[in-house]
Amino acid sequence: MRCQICKSNEVDWSWHPFGPGESYDCFSTPGSHYRGFPTIKVCDVCYNLIVATTTDHDAPGVLFDFGRESYCVYRNELTELPF
Image (cartoon, rainbow, N blue to C red):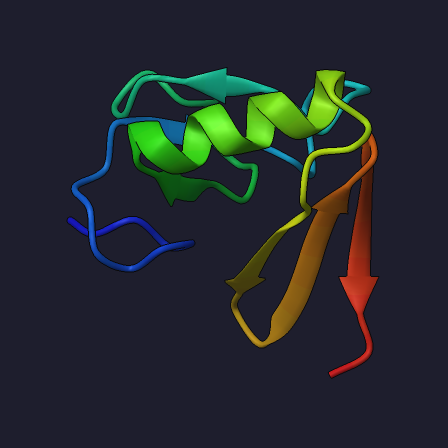
């Protein structure tokens, strides 16, 4: 299975930016993810970039598509994009 962000590497993590926690930076290994919540499958490279955006405010944002919506993680915030 391919990463839903870069679309090239194999999946290493399941990302839960929409719950169940209060924060968007909830990760688990594939197969042990939270059922009933949207999961974005990410590779280790994209995982490290997402984690970097939560601690380094000068890091670039991460764009990804989930379903028909586009989102951006930038400066500790998850934002739905209007396109």
